[in-house]
Image 1 (cartoon, helix red, strand yellow):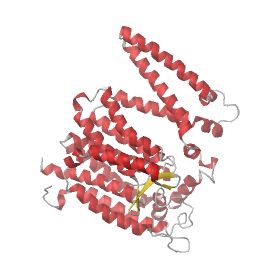
Image 2 (spheres, helix red, strand yellow):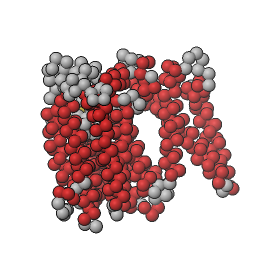
Image 3 (cartoon, helix red, strand yellow):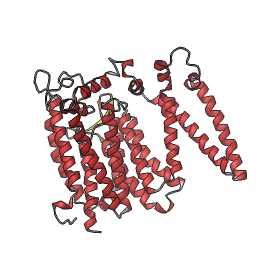
Image 4 (cartoon, helix red, strand yellow):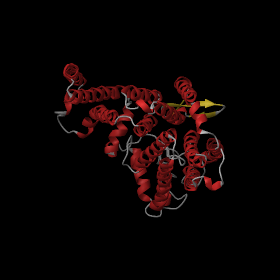
Length: 436
């Protein structure tokens, strides 16, 4: 790819990314320091290695033709699916999740790279079917493309990473022109599914005395009866629609299908999710329900963030991390360390860097003339936005703990490389304006 100069890059995105990676190395180092000043971890050294190698991958993506990745999107997708299956069978179990596959002595997380594979595959598929994008068949096929790696990730089990595939799919599908009613179907079904799935635990901890009405939605037998009744309504409405073609029958079918899907999915959530995963959603509402167990993470993180004040305690002078109160402090809760040591000012600096990346990415996409580029970039923006909102949100107690890392700051090569590949695609799209 030809470009005029270094300034052919979007410099603001490059500088923001470098700043975040620098912060990441600094606070990964800080996370390894104990209260006695002893360094008990060399993760920061590995992170430097990941950054250096990741920059090589980044440059490779920038100076390649995106059409090359598009042509090989199917093969890349299938390879990722195969490695995810191999991870389930032979992978290394870390923190209760079999998400890591050992290769040449190093551990990689295929589910991270699956995000890139899904973006490429979905963007290519929806672009090729742009003329019939509003058909149900195209929507369902796209949903299957995203759903397979999502289910494989959920089976590890890694609920946090599996959730990232939802906004990626939704963003690409929406920008591609999929009918909004299909996306709203997924949204409302998902809300009902989550409510039904966690309701037994919610009633146990928050409803005092007789559960009363909640018992209707808690009991599996009553739920099965409700599903059967709604299914009967669906069948009658379907017969009515086929015989009269009246529009209101269609919307009855649509609503009934949402209820059935949500209820059935809620029952599935109860069967599939582990107790600790459901408890993460419960303690999000009140962490002091289990302050020394599942709620410990949120409480300690909020304490760390709050103690930072305006300017923070100073680099390497945090207490929560150095006394080892913060769990997974170099990965899931890296923002908590930064907020404690650099305070509100440092937190705003990080949020500003991510905001620059997101806003500039949207501007890049607004100027792109290639539909495939726009779809791919939409998935990238959705991925970054979801990671930032969920990770920082769980650090300050406004989001459930899901184990999603913070791109460029959290320790880990797979996450860092995925983020740099995504930035590489955005810069590639930006540079492409000189050749169009």
